[in-house]
Every structure is written in C-alpha cells, then in structure tokens.
Amino acid sequence: MHFTTLASGSSGNAILVGEGNRHLLVDCGISGKSILHNLSCLNISGSEIEGIVVTHEHVDHIRGVGVLARKLNIPIYATTRLWDAMSPFLGKLAEHHRMEVQESFSCAGLDVLLYPTSHDSRESFGLKISQPKCEGKGNLAIGIATDSGTITEEMHRHLKGCDAFVVEANYDDQMLKFGSYPAYLKKRIRGQYGHLDNMQVAEGLLEWMAENTQRILLAHLSEENNTPEIALSTVMRILRDSNRLKECMEVQVQVAPRHSPHELIVLKE
Image 1 (cartoon, rainbow, N blue to C red):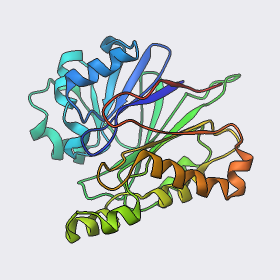
Image 2: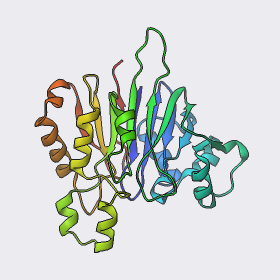
Image 3: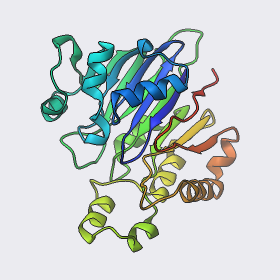
C-alpha cells in the first residue's frame, strides 16, 4: 500500500492512495492537467486512477474534480450534502460519474471510511483508507485529517493506530498572530471551524501513533503563516519530548510540498 500528496496548501490539495497499479484520489484542488502532470512525475498513468473522493466543497479541494472525472471517465464519491454544494462548480457530469456515499465504501480495492471534521463548509470529512481484512495478510491503514479547527472525538476514534498519516499542520500560532492577515481572518483560522496549528496536530499525533506507525506527512501548510522548517521542528520537538516517539522508533516525519508531488511513500507489510 502506498500514498503521497500531489499538491498541498491553500492553493490546492490532492492526495493519492493506492496499492499495486490501482489508485484513488482524495480531492483534486488543482487543475486536471496539473494532476496528470504530477502523476506522470511519479510514473503513474491517469488510467490507473479509479475514483475521486471529495472531503468538502472548498475550491482548493474540488477545482479539478469535474474535469478529471470526465477526462478519465471515473466516478466521484461524495455525500449527498456535498453533491448539493459542489455540483454547480463541477460542470456537466454523466450519471455514472456521480456516486453518493455515506460513511463507508470501497474504491480501487481499498476500504474508505469517512468521519466528520470541524470546518466552515457544508460538510467536511477526514478519511481512514485501509486494505480489506484478509486472513494471513496485514491490514494497513492510512489516516487523513485536514481542514478541521479542532481535534475531534471522531479523529481519536478512527485514527488511533494507523500505519501512516497525512495530517494538517496549517499554521504557526505566532506567525499568524503577528502576520498581515486581518483580524477577522485570523479569528476564522484559529476558530473551531478553521484549521489546525502545528502544536494541535502534534498533540493529536501523540494520541494516534502506535508501534506500527511508519510515516507521517504534514500537509496543508499556510504559505503566509507557516514554513516547512517551523512545522517540522515544532512537531518533532513535541513528539521527542513524549514517550510516544520512543515507542515508535521507525516513524519518519516529512512535509508535503506545496505545488509538486511528494515522493511515493510505500508502507511495509
């Protein structure tokens, strides 16, 4: 099982998860052309993408969804309320492109679980994507948690013990506090329905990590109120100060690039 980000940040987000030559996308917040280019950088063909899962309707998550679904002739998976919110922005779609889902479904041979996050959108979700349970085989799972103003009980319930994480480290609190954003925007970002800062996500990871956790990818960094260096150093400092990191000696923590794809991360069985 493998995963990576194709783009990450307020200018656009897309996550790739797959196994073998079967893949799904979580969001497509950049152009379809850019998605295909970034896939080619990883030697992955568009024909290997079997569906797009949408976490919420903000433009940095759906910009290329309609175009890519039409070009690759693949389904889009979203809840009924998200379809209502995003349909006007996707262009004309055939009936087979539209897949209304609830809490759990399968795509590209993987099990997908949606859980609610706390964000200022019609609905917003995090995901747990895992291998189907099979006797004699491991059940690897990747937890995805972005676009949430708080660490929710649902995150604790579904992300604990995942083998890998793609998690939001949106802002550094001091950079936001003394930055150029107007007061109302700072309040929105810091609020219950905004985004997670570096310290919040580190504290969440302390609860979610386990001995089997292999990789952590920090995502959705603010271009104005964070840097990869600050995000990584803050998270690593908090993890190092805890016993949790001592129990997870093999874990690697990295930061997702903004415009280019991160290298493909392959999990060990």
